[in-house]
Length: 213
Image (cartoon, rainbow, N blue to C red):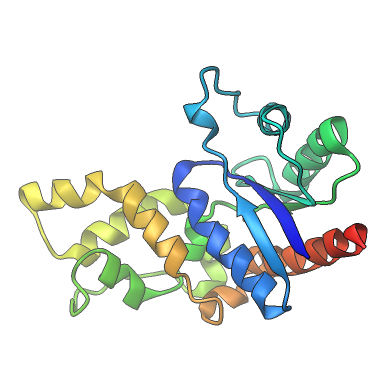
């Protein structure tokens, strides 16, 4: 039996979360297919609201056993985002189990847990410039982890001038690479939002499996 999962992401580079959903399923010997719809390519793209995105996906005729919704907490707080996602799913597809993926601040906090990977993605794996990364325990309290990630990648690249401009322009690409390569057994496991992500996906997949029996 294959569990059909639809993943509603916040931005294009958040597609890097998909391999982690697949890996968690594999850890539990579950077969999954994860649909990552590019809603921005529709003739009339939906708005940013989760309910609008979900309606657009279901209007395309997809049938799913599990809905995974990624939404950064930003300044709204985790509880508010979780409630927002639950209300949207209840309004559109209440019979399908769902998993909210809500990093405490932004997904970028996850990506700041591996100095070695930051250097590799920045194109300077043997760099020795200090990146001055915050302690892992402080990452989810950073006001703007996205800006810190931008600055850290620029610093890790070790370049300047036009080459630095090129590095900065590739931020979205670098962000996606970091997300795809994120070490699931590394320091990210100490972040509460990652722990909730893993547990949520595990429980959601089991609920979806049981619902198909």
